[in-house]
Image (cartoon, rainbow, N blue to C red; front, side):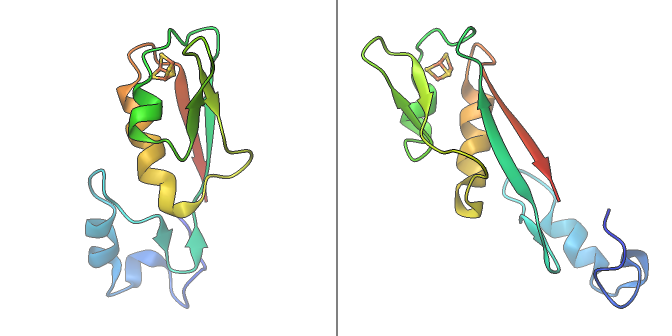
Length: 104
Ligand code: F3S
């Protein structure tokens, strides 16, 4: 948990409970104070079997080739507004071909 982004440590902030609640569940915010969580999506082409759920759920991030295999359409960090779609695609791939890394 970040320390030092506010004037006081996070555990002394009166906003802490609000922040904690906002981070609970799948629809949580990707920002805490001024910190932006960075996300990258990784596709393991060896595992992909062409189920195309990723494309159906997050066409902003995935495309499919002529053989139905997934392709990433973003390079580098995923835009913040697409973080939930990336998570949705990863959690719905039956082959576990999509992984996500996040850091702050
Ligand atoms: Fe492949 Fe999984 Fe998408 S199998 S096409 S990465 S849903």
